[in-house]
Image (tube, rainbow, N blue to C red; front, side, top):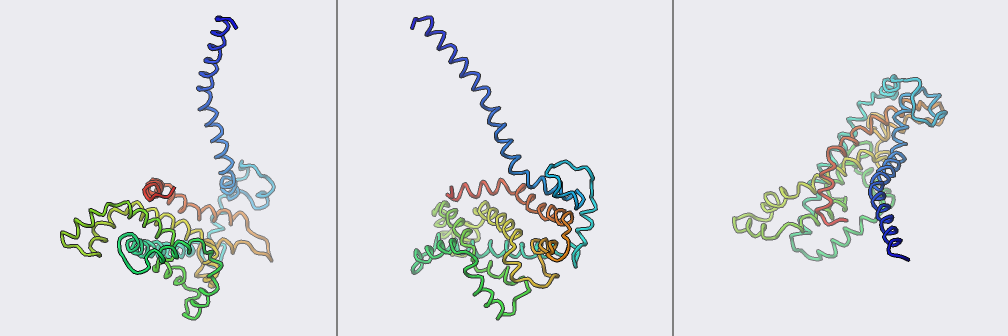
Length: 294
């Protein structure tokens, strides 16, 4: 190969590299946009279906609306035994109780595991981690018997009270990891100033745990709002139904299902989750990134 040929080959490769460097971002964005469209298509189709007549929902898989039916939302809001406002309020009560319970109990349990010394601490911490792998279906029967004997069936207590006992081990672990990243010198400085264990927790640790607390609150909101199984088990009175159980009531095996109304109320039920994720996204990223969970 002559010198001139070698120079020509190198120049051609350089031009090819430069052109690929310019095309690569475009290709990446096109692939990402296509992937996002595939993942979002079911949600978009549900929103579009909430605006269609019931007899056209399953005929056309497209996302173009030919006959706009906004009344699906009005009909769906009053289609069940109670206005949909009742179910939204019921879910709000359960969610707020679960968030408050997890923030209080899990933060206290995490502080104990991360800072205090007590008998069999490592053993109890291991048992707590093992409980994360325990499916809810394993404990739902004994829990139901316990709550039934206590007279709590068809109340919100079975859905809220366990949260006050730090039963969500994932959040305890998340907060333990966060507290371990807080320098112990701050505890020593507070102890010199006269703070006890409670004072150190309330005045030093808790204010620094805001990212972890925000992450716990957001995850608890999303998981509790979307929980169907537990709420279906414990709530039997239609007046006590939460949003997921109420949406199930739209599907009737004996009569025709009002799909348009059901999809309309499904869209309404997704709005709080969307807003929670939208406004809490930065807290989620910060909270998870600072707890050592990768």
